[in-house]
Image (cartoon, rainbow, N blue to C red; front, top):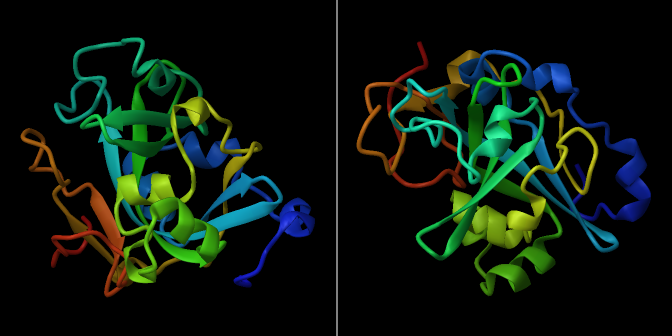
Length: 211
């Protein structure tokens, strides 16, 4: 993709279909790698290649926001697949998730890191940094860089101002897996996936292949 994609190119970007998300969450988490997150902000497109994800699967997953049942905060997770679940943490940061699986079953994929592709100057301004390598290498950072907040909670990732479009398919040998970050329970699952050797992944780079 070009580093200068603007409004006139929007109509040529076809989002992933809803059927993509209506599948096993761990599978979706891996297949989102290499796809592009696209945020329309005014007349500009901010675009990043997805390089790191985490899967959260149902009420039986102690690390999932739905582990204690449905609440006003996590209600979007119980809705249909292919919608954005955006939440606020630590009183400071927003995090973006893609809802997966069937309606009524709470599951989602956290978008943990992006490789910035287009709209870098706007991202720098929103992040208040000049360091490209620090723009989107974490879930809170990428939301700040793309102006993603609770107003986008429930946004349709298949056709709104925030979508995911296909990229080149990533070979399984280039995907690394690790326990998820920042949780106390559920660490036995290797449900954090990232592109091996990519400089924009967040900290704690892993060494195990997905199973």
